[in-house]
Image (cartoon, rainbow, N blue to C red; front, side):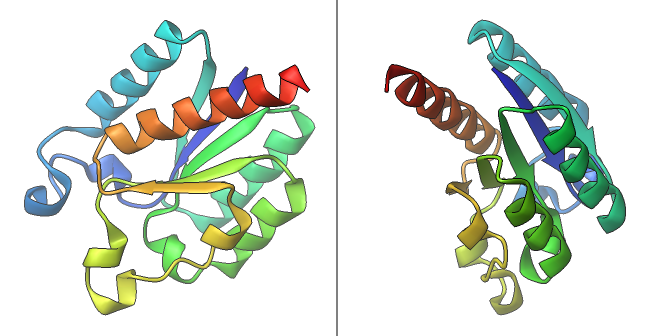
Length: 149
C-alpha cells in the first residue's frame, strides 16, 4: 500500500511552536515515527510538508497521477478555511484521512471547524503522533476490507 502523508503550515516548527499545545517533539521525530510505524506494517509512505497552500494542492493532484492508494493530511490552519484544498481532495477521489495533533474541537472557537472533514473518510485528532498511527491503521484496514470483497 502506498500512502502519501501531507503536513501543512507550521508543522515544520514542532518542538518550537506552542509546546504546551503541540508538545516538545520535533518534526523530524514525527517523520521518524511515521516511517518506523509504516515499515513495521509493510506500508510505503511518502511524507511531504509545505507552508504553501498551492504546493499542497499540487501534491494532492500529483497523488492522483501517481496512483497513490490513500492520503493522510494534517492541513494545519488550512483546515479551517481552505476550500481549495477541500476541492482538491474531493476531485481526486483517493481515500483521505484528516489528522491533527491537538483536538481542534477543544481549541479556540475559530479552530473548531474543519472545511475538509466532509470530504475525508475519517478524522483523528488530539492524540499527538498517535493520530497518525490511527490513520495508518484505519487506511490499512480499509484496504484489507476492500481487497476481501
